[in-house]
Each structure stands twice: as C-alpha cells, then as structure tokens.
Length: 345
Image (cartoon, rainbow, N blue to C red; front, side, top):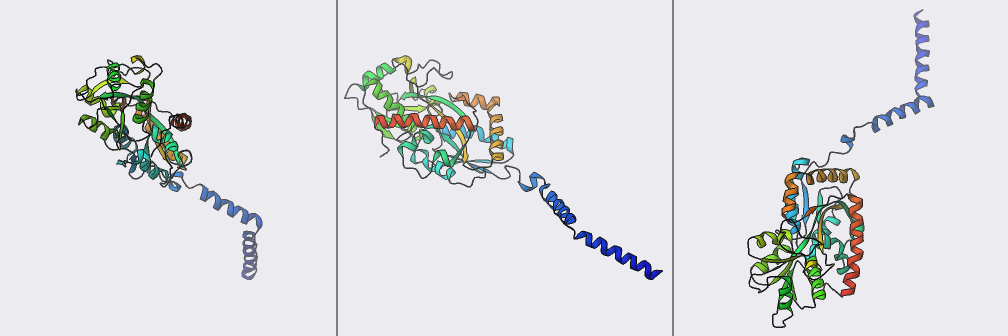
C-alpha cells in the first residue's frame, strides 16, 4: 500500500508539474507578471513635481519689469509647490542669453523662463539666434501685460507731450533717449513716436529697463519710454516726469497721465507682456502642475494688488492661447522691423 500510494502521489506530482509548462499556464504567468509591473503606483514611477528647487531665469537686470514680475510670483509659487524658486538674472543680448539657456535646458521643469514680449516676438527677426522660439520653448502661461510710459529727466523743459515734441523739433536740443536694448519695446516705441511726430532723438541702448531708467535718473540720458514697473515709483516721487502712456487707455495707478493717442497721435498703442515658459518637450504633467499653480497664485489678492501697483493687468492665458499670441505678434513685428529697416548691428 505505501508503494502504491507513493506511486500515485508521484504520478500526480508529475501531472501538476507538466501543467506548469503548458501554454495556458505560461501565458497566465506572464499576464500576472505584466499586471504586477503595470500596477506600480504612478508616484513610484514618476516622482512628484517639484521635488527640488526650481530655477527661474530672467533675461534682464534687477529693477526692470521682468525681474519685478518674477519676484512677485516666486514666493507664492514656493508656498504653493513646497520648493524654493530661485530667480537667476542673466542680462544681455536683449534677453537672448537667458532664453537660450532655457531653450537648451533639460526639459524636466526645473529650469524655466520669465519671457518678455519682444524677446520672444521681435528678437527672432533681429538676431541670428541659436534656438528657435517656436520649436525649443514650451509656453506655459501668460502672466501680465501693460503699456509703457514716456518719462523725462526733470531738467528737460517740457510739461506735456506736445511741449516735448516742439522741443525735440528744435535741432539744438540734442535729446537722447534710453532703451533696454536694440529691438526692445522701449526702442521700438520710441522709433514709432519719432516717425509719427517727425522728430529726431539719439538712441542710447542699455542692457535692461533698470539700467535705462537709472541712466535717465542720473541725467546721463534725457528721455525714456520705459516699463511701468521700472519708472512708476520715480514718477510718483518726482524724480522723473511722466508725459504719456503708450497703451490704448490711461492706467489706474497714474490716472492723470494721458495716453500718447489722446495727446495727438490716434491709434498709437504699444504694450508689453510677461509669461512663463519651459523647454520644449517638458512632460505634460509638469506643464499642467505649473499652469494650475501659477493660475492659482495669480488669483491671490496680494498678487493682484502687487501686479496692479506696477501698472500691469493679469492675463493668465494657458499654453495654447499663449503660443498663438507669440506666433501672431512675431509675424506683426517682423513686418514692422523690415519696413522700418531696424537692424541689431
């Protein structure tokens, strides 16, 4: 009996063992392995973003509009996402240096850019760039927009835009104007005003809105069409004289200063904007986190007030609309630059 029992047991064992090698069992075994692998939690396969500090590049020096906007939003993004945001000012080449760094960075969401309107829409026509805005950058969300203000050093004897133009038409005036660089909106707005008013001003380019404003404050240059964040405080303090804003309507933070359009030049409308961009091919999940967090930050009353104090309006358009805006304005400015014969050299 024991022998018979062992024989039966042995044969049963062999039968089970052979069943393990059957096609059905092998297929089932691999199906279970695949299910186990694909059932790994998403946060184990892809760490949460961000899990280390984020570097935010600004293409202009401290004190200009881009830098001001960056320093308004970064503390709130730190609070929202739990990681430090480090503002890295890389001025030069009309914003191209910082933009190229981001365009060529690893697309992981840890190297981002505060993009400026002309850097993204004017520079592609003016410069031979080592990157392609449309191919190498991912628009994330637009942040804010606003007009410029024509300001004078107090030594210039003009209390209105009309008086300034009359003074500029006097060939003995020898007036200079500062800008944030060749092709900057300061430059383009001033050249447009020169054409419309028939006046002559000498262009003195600087490496950003902050240095340009400092040059006018020091009397080194007499005139500037500067961003509101870079000049408004000085106008209110009486250190610069504001004559006109370049947008279609007056700004709430300086309601007594008229527009260029209502000062005799209908249709004159030059505004700028700021936005957040990442390297192309940044994962969609990372872009979505940035869009949601930044959108929420822009809704905070403290942020809205801080942006408004700079004479700017929050825009907060998402990736698709922001990309379309860049494309449209690039085409517009390309025509203007070619028609006016503006050259970077």
